[in-house]
Length: 258
Length: 368
Image 1 (spheres, rainbow over the protein chains, first blue to last red):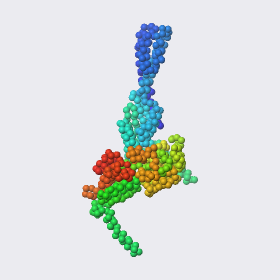
Image 2: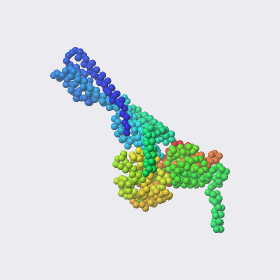
Image 3: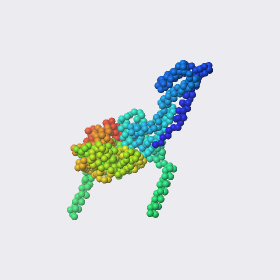
């Protein structure tokens, strides 16, 4: 099985993350700006003003509570940390919150990993009538394209792996009607239409559906790739055929000599 | 010698009389004037349909002057092949099929100029497995059936490391530990019969397609040959003629573990000596057949050639096709309590029957 995972995902994620971190850092600097201008030692209370909304946010997200609790320790009058050190701690808190929040957001908008997708589709082949029937219709998953972004993108490509016998067609027809009796919903109806299209087109003499691209996210879409039934032989197949023919000739020669 | 000649002359004189008796005068007149090309309807198709053909013909003959049709029953596919070969007196008028016409068969018909077909579904039937009453009940599945009967079966620990080897199974228990340790013995109708064709399509190919090694074979001809070639070591016996009598008799005489394959109608007929076996845990009953829950269910059909019907001037290939359509789609034949139900056919749902009856009476063209 071949997985083509979109390479732009980490790129776009990093750029979005960097931009948000930069904006947050600038906000911190702007908030701390007047203190620096006065040239006074940093007041913990000033920093707590910056940290306060972060604490609130972090509680709501429920992850950096311990860091938030640490930041309240800056009220300690014996805290002899330098301004830069305190800035560093603060920046760490901001980074921690940002990374967690972004992580949560990111996981909400990203599709499952390719490995999870493969497992899910394998499970579906056994459980879902659509995946079972597309298998019986002679198609198998060849690629899963898993694009991360807003919105995320998941496309499954099925390739044709076998011709159907008349009994296979009868079986699929029968399973489709059984499925219709069980589930007459819109989604199931659309899925049945995909299977019916595959079966009926492949019965024609001139064209077959060579591949099916099923986009799951963001919006469902199906694309059929039609190919002539008797297309020309590919270069690889042609080379293989010639090699087999050469081998065959040699074997005949050997037999004659023997 | 004189006696022989006198007998011969007597028979020669008798033939026209018999002919005149079998063929009604109206038909004879139509034949002589060239309005019709042949006196009898020709039905091709499955021999499983023979009882239905006979019963419908009997009812037709009671109402009309239509002689009993000539039957050329060599199997559903062979029936479609001859039916779709052309238009004219030498080609059949009706196909009695144990399954729906396939796209490929329809295309052959269309290529030969037969585009006006009328389809009449008669009802549901089923192919069932039977054993001797008193034997342990075998709980079969298509996979078990394929493994018990195929010449070559997949062997190997994992689905991706399997190979096709000569069938090694001698007892049912070797296939599934829950089955009894009786020897595998199966009696089934010959290859040309409709029942065998359904058995191949539903059970042999159905069981076969569960194996990954088979699913990976691209060409269907290669796959079908592997799936439907029966073992030749004597564990499977095919009955070419009179299987409806022979199969039950052989099952009753056979040792424990002997299984027969017959149409549901004959299984019910021999219910006192045979037990019907469940497939996938479902027993074939009128309810499970009607709901399509039982695996071996199939719908039986008639296909008529409109080009062979007589036109408004009474000119055509044969008389009686329209009457045959009317009779075969009638409620008297197909409804619950109808005469076809008495022959083991499970009636179609009422709304379906009504819609199909209307379509048949309007001579609506069948399309795929």
